[in-house]
Image (tube, rainbow, N blue to C red; front, side, top):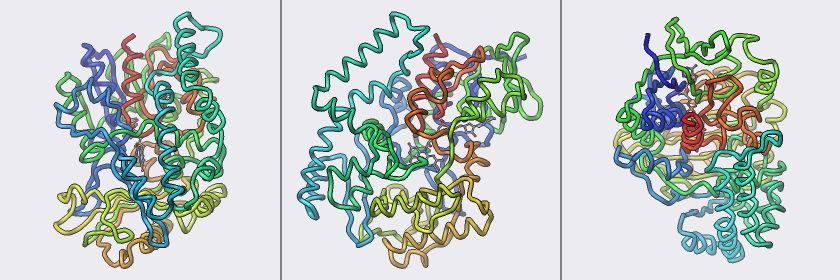
Length: 512
Ligand SMILES: Cc1cc2nc3c(=O)[nH]c(=O)nc-3n(C[C@H](O)[C@H](O)[C@H](O)COP(=O)(O)OP(=O)(O)OC[C@H]3O[C@@H](n4cnc5c(N)ncnc54)[C@H](O)[C@@H]3O)c2cc1C
């Protein structure tokens, strides 16, 4: 009977991070991944013969430098740049602007259409620079213990330090941060900028994956979190990160099994974790299990009914994870230009009005016919992903509800594909004629293929109540009320995105 110290459920980027850190500390670790490939949502896959993506997602700016260093990922082939990739914001009237990590270059680009916005952008970046230290301190450390009944001297010191950091911002910046945090992102950016498509494009990351429009309260927080954490850029995209993590895991001695779906987490007579049972019946034993699948998948599907305390089941069930993202992968027989530019990353949005209108139908379980898009053309930097001279256009489609009233039939997905092509035609006339292959994934496909509960891209919504004590108070520091069970995926602090952050912080908690 094989016995491991820790079994990690799921071989996405967080599961691999947890496993590698634990193995480097001398633990005997097994990763069990239900799909036949590693990487979870970050796995690169062929979607049409001869055309591949570098992963379902685009943005690798949040990958934590400390994890890259600790796991020596560069030695394992990772090429990571310490600046964000340029992203082009597109306007329907043919204008566009490249938001670059070089603030001066961006200011110059903005000044071509608005001197006022150029100055405002410079001030905005200054403000973000100041507050990102405080925000990153919160996001790059395990959440502080705020359980007043069990406060230790150590946790009081941590809380006091956080208060001091906030005070260290100075009165003006601190007051501004406290003022803007609960604001909706439209009000926040309307105070600063005048150009509609610039505001829409800057706000977009705050709304990705959210059940929110630009006029939803607290959406500014998501923008501040994203802006503060986004610093890097992985060459080769998410799949390149997965390749390096896999090598690091293997070198550290992690055992990896793909095509191995966990059906149940096993408990002994005292209710302590003793391993997992795979579908097919094989039992594998370990005194600790770290789950990188969603918290709902972990607690609601991997235990028998009534095996857990009622209160735990109840609160896990209440986690909001209403998926609002779809994906369209396009095989294109030419080089693609958007508003006359060749660009790898681009965003549409156009105006807050259009973004809010795209969100409105979501509330009524309907689908907009004018979604806004996050576009990645990976063949721009890696032509080998498609035949010579051809392109892959990977599109994240926002404000597409999981619980579409009519259901995600083949026809419904076809219609979604048509809406996306209609939008792309605006920025790239003749685009549709160049399509030689298309893959359309609805939020229900995400659930089926990647076990994302309700198709939510972050394993649970990023809303303020689900960020402070993520996913629920009793599990917010990776440890759970089930003895020996830990959470290590995007459902935990500091949340979703391709960051390696929950995976690395969970590993520290597991070793304690
Ligand atoms: C369409 C889409 C676009 C996104 N875009 C971006 C982006 O541009 N930038 C960004 O930063 N983030 C983005 N995200 C979010 C980000 O991808 C996720 O938050 C992150 O990748 C999740 O990583 P993870 O390791 O926590 O979990 P996952 O990648 O979900 O890995 C969990 C793994 O567990 C496995 N698993 C589940 N159940 C079981 C079981 N019972 N037994 C065994 N294995 C199991 C799954 O197969 C999966 O491999 C996007 C997500 C999606 C879906």
